[in-house]
Length: 125
Image (cartoon, rainbow, N blue to C red; front, side, top):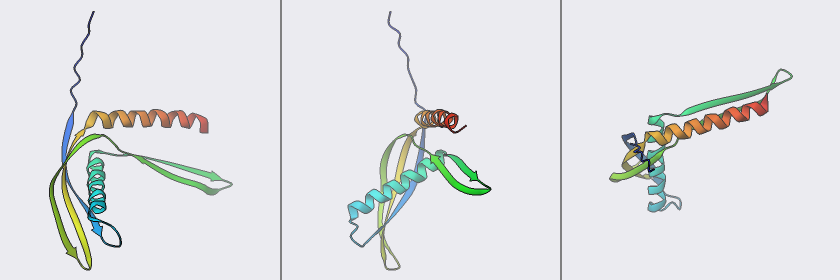
């Protein structure tokens, strides 16, 4: 017997601008990577992020204060526009990038993080 299933990925299209400053040994190629990463982070944050905070108090004193965040997804990126300009005394590279984000992969990553987080909390109790 052969069973087939079709999974349709839910995608969201996001357009973001990423910025990088060129100078002090940073090449245009390095700046392009920084700008793409900047745009990618903005795109993922627009999809959503999960924040978790842990505080530890010992003898009425805060001894640990930790904040974690997770965001991530499978995505395809397409560069739409690239501009170089001068701002003050700095050269700036601006990239406009379109991202097709797989929303299902974001949800799966979040579910895995929450499951891992819950198992870690059992160790703290």
